[in-house]
Every structure is written in C-alpha cells, then in structure tokens.
Length: 502
Image (cartoon, rainbow, N blue to C red; front, side):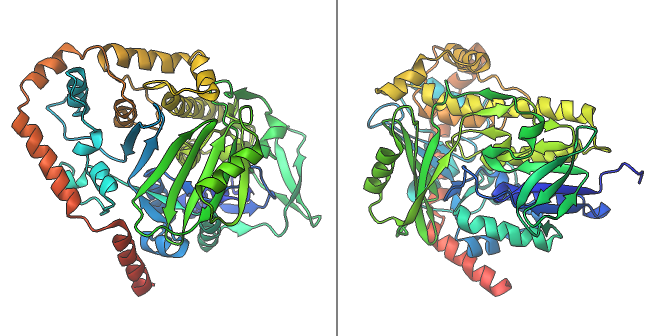
C-alpha cells in the first residue's frame, strides 16, 4: 500500500441508507481492513415510516451476509410480488406491475408483444394472467422462485415491504457486527482542509474525527456535499409531489404480497402490509394540497392509526455533482424523488456499487469522480423518467394536479421513448436503466397504452402463434400460482425457520 491509499471512510447519516452503505463498504473491503465509521447527522426531513423495495434488495442483503428468514422475523417485513395501481387512468382503472417476466420468450420475441397485438385487435389481456408473480400476487399466494432458468417457476422474483423504524436499527446492529464503528456523538460541523477536501468532522462533544473519504447519507440536508457542490437540478415542474404523511395502522388479516397505490386529488396514497401492522401513507404536492388536509385524508383512509404520523419532505431533483473531491453523496443527499416506484434504496445501492467499482486511490480523484458523476446522472435521470411515465401513460385523469403534470413538456429522452412505443410498440432501452424493458411493458400495457401497429417481423411471428399454445401457457401459470401457499402462511414458516436456526 502506498502512503495515499484510502484507509478510512466516514459515512455521515442516521437512516437506512447510511447503515447499508457502511455495511456494504466494510463487507466489500474486508480484505484490506478499511475503517468505516458512521457519524450521526441528526434528524432529517426525509424520515419516514415504511418502505417497499425492489428485488435488488435481496442482492444487497446477500452482500451484507443477512439471513433472509432472520431479517423477516426481526423486522416483521413481508414479501412483495407486485405493486397495484388504482385510479391512475380514471376512477375505476387498475393495473398490476409484478416483479418478473411476462409469459415466455417467443423465439426471440418478448411475450408482451402478444399482449400488444391482442390489444390492437380489441382483445385486452392483463399481463398478470401470463406472469407467475402477477397471478400469485392477485390471489394472495407466495413462494420463492425455484428450478432452472427456463422453468416457469423461476421466471419471477420478489422484493420486501418493511417498517423503516425496525429496519434501520436492524441494519445498524448488523453493520456493527461487520466491524463498522459508530461515532461517539452527533455531527457538529465539517472541517475543510487547505486542499479544498474535507479534512475531518467535529462532533457535538468537541472531539474531531478524521478520514480519507466521506460518504454523505445525511438526507436532503446534505450536511457534507452541500458545502462542496451545492448546485442541483430541479424536477418539480414535472413531479410536483413534495410531501408524504406515513403511519402504521392495524395488521391486516390476510395480506397479499402487494403494495397498493391509489391515485388521489393532489397525489397518491399507499398501503403495504407488514407482519405487525399496515403501513399507510399519503403523498401529495403542497402546491395543490396543504399538510393538514392531506393528514385528514390519511386519517379517513385509516381511522385506527397507531401513534403519530410522520411528515416527510422532499424536492424532486438531483445534484449536478454526486462526487466532489473526497466526498460522495448517496441517497437523498444526492437524489430526491417521490417513492412511487420503491427505487430509492435501489439507486443508493447503485451508488455504492459504482463507488466500489471506481474506488479511489487518493483524495483528489478527479478521473474516477467524473465517471461516477456521469453514470449516476444517467441512472437518476432514467428513474425520473420511469416515475414520470406513470403520470403520462394512458388515459388522462381529471383534476388540476393531474392536468398540470400533463401540461409540461416531457424530458427529451422520455418523449422519444413514449413516441416510439406509440408508433410501433417498441421499447428502446439505454445502458444505464434502473428498470428493465419488461418493467416498462408492465407499466405501459397496464396503463392501457396501445401502439398504432407492431414491427413487421413481430406481426409475422405472432401470426404463427396458435391459440392452443397461449391457452396452455395461461393454464400452466394459473395452476403454478394456485399451488403456492398463502402469503402469511409462507411468512409463518420463515419465522419458524429463523427461530430454529437462531
């Protein structure tokens, strides 16, 4: 090792992202004894109750060495197979976005092309009819994927629904088992060096802690990166939601592995089950609804709230520079967006993975920083586009809030993607995308977006597809989903396993 190798990192933050990043760094660099410390940055405006994740959270848990059955038992988390959207294209509209493939590959043609062709012929088929995760989610069933890659039983995946007030301390305890240290006092101030890098942080007890690198997970307050790179892109003209009330309600009796999202007058509401409660929330734009009326709406939706609701504040947008000198912003310090797609932890984990890949050799790492900033900007912009597409796809919903979003000119890349889909049913994917082609298909087909036609080679192939093949696939998927146990029964088995292994 040379004298300027990175030996120590301070992660500044208090929430879930901070402990995931710290634990991930400790685990990834265990071979070089990297010293990782988490420094408490105090209360943040983006604190929340409850979250739903993407399937990538399973990969993060694997990196951290977390036992899934013990995680479920100790946090009360539940599985998530899908998100159900209600009212986004009008009062009685509904569609499902499940975690997994739709149908099977048709000789190189994605099966969702068959659904597009049926819609063009006036025969609308719901994607979940041909998807294991969708069929299981709709019927309240759950099982893990199994079998070889081409088996129907392996063509789906799953995520989690978890109470953040339990998840954060669980991650903290696990990270400290991995060797992460916790600062002895909260952050008081950042101390800059003569070279323009962060030299150290001073804590509330007067002590000073130095490090080679600093990861800012302090939330929207951006306690560290804000001093080095305050410039930020504002997305609120496209995505005006900037507040969320969240709380716990009574536990459901037979919850599905589904997060439910309902369109509302000035935003949307959500409900997700955990073992000990229902997590509920109201996401809204303060331009169109005040905090008290949004809270009243949450109380009407769930009259038996447990404890006081938490107000989360955010402003859609991202930093122009995520990595500046020896400081990297991850999580809400880097990027803020309404939690519609459940991708906030996913983007934070992409930030961690990219930082590990580009890990610097010295504090002034401008080459690695430039590449990191390029990649993370692409990821963030793509997530913005996927989120915004939910508001713009399908039939328009009435109301001032919804009309204001529809009135804005779309970001160029999103406009091109939706235009191409409308013309030919084609989904043009780029390199850095947090969501895959099939995710866009779930959302656009579910929203009722019907292309004018399909590519000629697709039409020729589908013309040879027999109705018997389609019927057999539908039946096989429905039978497989029906054979799964109820969601809560599967969770009880996991609790028994965790207690036995212990």
